[in-house]
Length: 315
Image 1 (cartoon, helix red, strand yellow):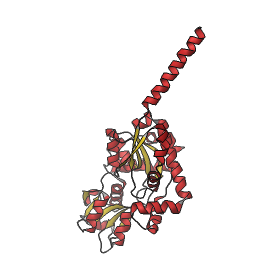
Image 2 (tube, helix red, strand yellow):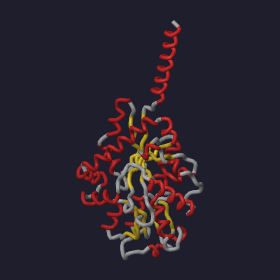
Image 3 (cartoon, helix red, strand yellow):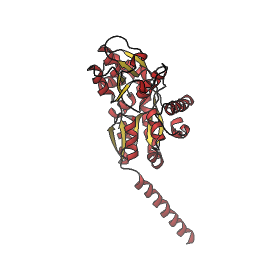
Image 4 (cartoon, one colour):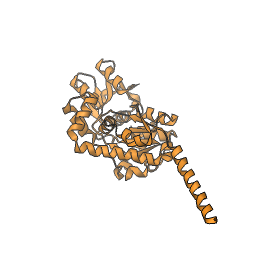
């Protein structure tokens, strides 16, 4: 009788634990949809409804939230309105952590060295030195901002040598086309469109900054829903594999979403260098990026970058 009673108690404890686990699972996941600069994995994953299918049997709804700015994504995570960002630049991730907002790397997305650029207004080819005293528009606290600072520094200048105007890339593009600014910080298709309109690229991130795009997650969600996060990462990696196995179909989807030709979509994809597992070189890039951000007062407090990368991102 004692053994039977013990087994019954154990069963009740186990059942209670399982019920608590089920009750603790969220009924929805809020994830940022970021199609720019040319985030093909995110585009394909959303259009294929891959996450929706993965979590349908669990009764978990996927809410896609359009937030392109890494800084705004981090703010939304801090406010609890965003759980995961399908794509965040590591400059924004580092600055968020430096400000005490714990945002972690779940897996890799892209190393787009040629996708970020400073573009001058239509006319003669501008050099970096020509930016001195000029109006430059672009998003503050992003990899584009980092590219501008690095470019100026390479010529012995600082951000104080230009009139920097905070503006998201689409508005910066419009300001450049309207000749309201002398240069703009642009990415992907906006670079191509501005070049086609006669505006010339001053400099790209290549050789100045090693931009790293990652899937990011709030520390709270990572701790409380590690099993769900593993499944999100699994779907992302399956999507990356599908893209390379069905390249033409993926490019067609990306071209339609970005509003560019198949030829330009192919160019953007090749500029992006998609990947999914964080390497030792990526960890070193995080350290280098932090040193740069601290040195240029874009980040105030130093953090342990190794602790920002979840084990699953390395597997």
